Amino acid sequence: MTITTPAQEAGPVDFDTYGTIYAPRGGTQLAPFGLGPQGTGEAYPFRRRITPEGPFAPASGRYHLYVSLACPYAHRTLIVRALKGLQDAVSVSVVDPIRDGRGWAFRSGRAQTLDTGGQGFAFLAQAYAASVPDGAYTGRVSVPVLWDKQTGQVVSNYFPDITLDLGSQFNDWAQHPEIDLYPHDLRADIDALNAHVGEHVNAGVYHAGFARTQAEYEAGYREVFDAFDGLESRLGDGGPYLFGDRLTEADVRLWVTLVRFDAVYHGHFKVNRQRLVDYPALWAYARRLYALPAFGSTTDFDHIQRHYYGTQLHLNPSGIVPLGPATDWRI
Image (cartoon, rainbow, N blue to C red; front, top):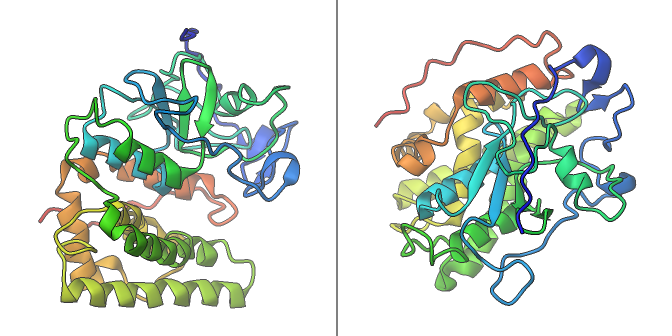
């Protein structure tokens, strides 16, 4: 039976009392950024899958996504949900893009929601606490989260699996069941490209942006642009997508970093050798995807910029959010 509790709203963001998510204080029980439960290295402790034979069987209306429009890893789930046409089958709550040391929170605001999953959470950390036996979860609280409304627990916070399951396990309720983002004949190639992009592009910008030494920063900087150079060549020789005319999971995973690159990573993370718009093939590719409703309609530059510049105060102590760049994403 699905539990329904009136939605609660978190109190205002308060950096003075609670610090930032990267340096929490004021009694906050969350682990330091990047760590898992009790300070372990496991940042993704919930890794269950949606399968017809398992305890989490596919069903319409049973599952709920908790996402941030700012987070590239959560953005992937919204793109796949929209591509497949699962809006009526899988519901969504959107957290406040600004988070203090208490973590992701549900507050009223433009393009964000209270907890619409029926649990009445004020903070996403409550969903994690509800999913462990003693309720004493002290690990990392990340988005996206796939929540089971029927049993009241987190199914998965492991983002690579969530999009694969959304793309394959809900075809009975999908408006576009014919879309296959992870076809069997390409899986080995997709996995290889995803591993490369995941390490050197999706995470690479963070390797540069969160570096603590000049050497770490320069290594991250170079890995991003080395990867961009290779992708520019690949798309220049083919396209329109990474695997010719077949839109796949690989495109979803790459694009969420590309769409944030000029707006955030180029300046905020100092990966500034070139902008995305300086790459003819990559820029054309990014705009082609943005023109698809599943990509463009799920992109919110305001949430993206306010989150990075307004939350990562260790990189931007003033919290000032830039007004630019003035970029035309239309084809």
